Every structure is written in structure tokens, then in C-alpha cells.
Length: 255
Image (cartoon, rainbow, N blue to C red):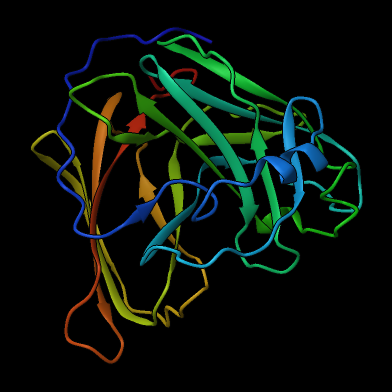
């Protein structure tokens, strides 16, 4: 994989109007839980569903997921691009809570401006044992910048595979979990001041159930993107609003 091709300009993250969670749970797992679920390069097991979740919880951002039979044992890999130095966090959990599955990669240094891979993440250790379906696993990779002036987090799209690496970036699938029923969600993706595209979801968006937003980035230049989201509660006139950053980097012939 190649290093960052160009030094694209930074786009300032607008202040959050609500609490948006970039982690896989509202709080960090305890040290005791980590000791009992230490699998070498990661912590993985069942975890209690914690209270105090935000109004919108980011539970996954994937650019690619290679299918596999949930009954088989494969070594998953998580491919991601780190645009600049900072603290990288890799977490996974169920999109639909069934067994309270949770995984967090152990902290390590990831060089800036390069593609990286986390693994092996064997499905035989916990996922198969707990019968967690491959399609029900969400992955969030985030970067907290090392800057006294900016403490924001950036979402880094994850590419999850076990045999075949992706060759292109076509779209990202972001999954958000609301804490209340929503009747509508509008979203707008920007690259700097330019609008990339916008959309609206009007399906049944139920509390506690993660819903997907597809972000088409096939023709988007490498660099920082800003996603703005505005929801409407089902039985109230107002709704949640959020704005956060995603770093886009093409694969192969994309960039």
C-alpha cells in the first residue's frame, strides 16, 4: 500500500450539537474485563450493555466486508489508512445486540500517511463460539489527533477481509444506532465547502436498532470529509443533529 499521496487541507469539525459516540460502547471496558478477555493482540468477549448511550451511536463504518460462513474459522484482517499521527482505536460489536459481543484491539503505534492492517482476528476464538453472524459485526476505527488545539476524532473507514483484499473504494456504509424512535434522518456529505451529495431516510428508524447510511465516494478526491446529520423524533418536533469527520483515501487505482 502507498503513503498519503497529497497533503490535503484540513477541514474544521463543527461543534457537536449532541453526544456522538465513536467508540463501541458508551464507556470503556474495565481493566478486569480486559484481563479476563485478553487474546494477545486484542480484548474480545461478551460485555454488559452499558447505560448512558448517546442519542446517535456510531457502531460501524465499513468500506468493504468479505463474506464468510459464520460456522467456519477464518483469520479476519482490518485494513485502514492513518492520515496523521494520533491515537488509533479499533473496536467491533454487534449491529443488533444479541450476545453483547465486543472486541477492542490493543493500543499500538501506527505510522502516519500509510495503510495499516490489524490482525489476525480469528473468528474461532469468540465469534463462532457465540454464534455471531458475520453480517452482524460492526467495526469502528477512529483517530484522535495529538494536538493541544484540536481534540476531535476522525473516523477511518475499515476494510474487513480474510482472503481477498478490496481493489477499489466505491462506497462506505455508516451505521448509527439512535436512542429514540426517529421518523426521518437527513444527511449531507461535504468535501471542504463543496457538497458531495445529500440524502434522506424515512423508513422506520427504531430506538436501539442500527440503521445504514451509504456514502458514495467513488469519484471523491482523497482527503477530509464532513458528514452532517439531522434527525426528527417520531413523536416530537425536534431531533438530534450531529457533524463529524471521515477521512477518505482511495485504494489501488482510486487515488
